Length: 399
Image 1 (cartoon, rainbow, N blue to C red):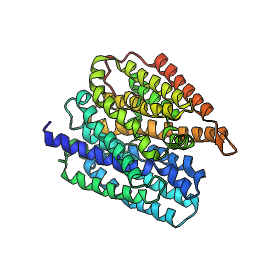
Image 2 (image 1 turned 90 degrees about the vertical axis):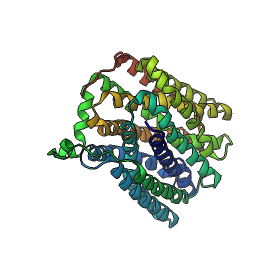
Image 3 (image 1 turned 135 degrees about the horizontal axis):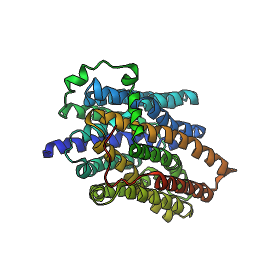
Image 4 (image 1 turned 30 degrees about the vertical axis):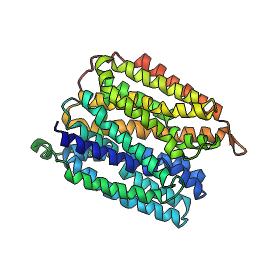
């Protein structure tokens, strides 16, 4: 790969990370500042609902009828406009459910960009196992930069953070104009598609392969306890006296960058089953540190987020890029998004939100109990994965 091609992909993921973080991370604080704290779990759940509805459709479009870069450009522009709509309804104190509806519309476009951007990058790599980590790390650096920017201009609890995110989405759309576009094959363009294929639902057949199914189900299950990370870690930080919570949250991304640079070598040496198992163990330790109710240990737990996320989710993305045929790549990543950010996160936002309300008495949250139960849930996922996943040191090809 030429250095200019690598730089283009890195810039794409960097700005993409900034655009996502600028609205997603501070959203809970923004809703509380406009007196809609009750909407926090539902607002975060909109991304999970979007992951159920839109990624497979856009994935099928990018695989079969419209080049992925063009799909990415369209949804970036749409997301930018919807970000401005969210800011407008918040600033004018519209009803909470109208605000929630606008956030949902924005999520329907922004969520599919995760799988589309990953497929754009992976389709250009000759050795995804070794090359993807260093390029994907730029997305994490972008996310960190977005968090820092939000806190630097003091928008942690301001609706104006949606305007800043809107600008970043427009910049991202512009970047897609300068990346070389790979044309779809004539065979793909001439296919007569059923409605099931147009909606991307045929990707579900990937679950028939035992090793694929083990990856997909584990990712879905662990997303449930992990869903508490962004909505409730900042609240826990605030209760422990920490400020600039968006900046502190970027500690997880700082370690994520380091682990991503390491993940290629790890995948070459260790069986995938061990790598995902390590990620689950890190997830357990993270929440155990949270349960100490000590600010220093909480920040150590935040820093462990990078290891847990990369060893589980990035390993799964790389695995699919190697084991799924080229013409299925975008749909495979979209199905992973559906299982992780859709089914898993939707259940997670609802369950961890309900558990949060149960642990809250007279405005005080029993954080120790809250995080200990989530650590036990991750432990249950580890037991499930280790007892059901076959050896994965020699991945099986199939679809």
